[in-house]
Length: 436
Picture 1 (cartoon, helix red, strand yellow):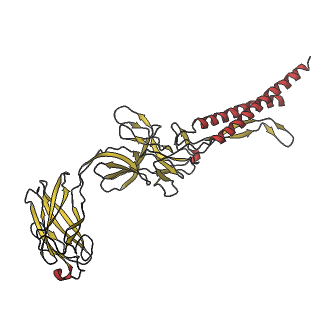
Picture 2: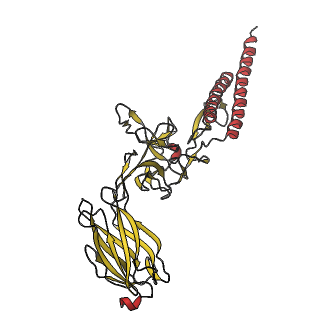
């Protein structure tokens, strides 16, 4: 009886070592697979009979031990959409159920992965090398607020960026205290209307008295009147009558045309507002000249020539799609050739109470099980969720040296079990020979 039991036990040993060999083979084959999580092998003893007086041969079976929570090595990538997680968590992804038509139909079973080698496909979706579609929260394009009520596949559809009309022009310059010429000085800046068309605004400065200048605004494309108006700017306490240091703006007044000025308040913005019409209605624009009583913006200090330090405006022309990138908070950002960028989605980090209890699926992805617990969506770096590293990918967590060591052990153990079978066979044969 024990001979047959020993033989049966050795046979289960062969099966167990074969299963271990299969796991080792899978690990070695995927040692270079992005986001792959290795599978270790545990052995479990099953008893036939065991007591203080007798122990009959039993059997051995294997159980997989998943290492989903063990992080692989991070490596840099030239892909701007590549992402890796340091710490716990997974990227939410979707599998395609059907590709009929232009828009894919997605499986309603949520999937999760650590394979972050993402890129844009031809339909504008963000997918990884396994063909999984990256999911995220949508972002309101106007307010920038994140809608965390639903996680859906991320698709880049904003190929054109809308123009932004100019509402503010910021001037930083020094008007000469002793100008070399009484003809005045001129600055020009381009502004944009609501359709993104550029128009020129000309600022003509002329000194009318000591520490007193008149700025006349001319907009050649204004359909009502190119000369939109003027204002008087005074510097220092004597000319303005206000308690400001010499050379700083003390007052703005004597407005004409469409120009309106901000009254003096020490420490408040020194600005004027004018209105232009480019065929789409009145467009108010504020000319920011700094702060009353401070040496920011427009000043009048020593010199005989006009010094322009900066002249900017906040409008932008329409832009075409340039690229897509991500940041460390998981935001997916669309960049345009007009210098603008817009966030369209945010990738959450999915957390599980027992990540090693996840069900393995094709393409280095996983699905939730009763053992893993329910997926919880968190912003990267919060509530225990891992941090997102952009421009990087997570390699397989398989260690080749360790796998080869296990391979040697499995090979020897298999040989030993095979030897047990042949030995038991010899002993049975000797038992049969006793009849002769």
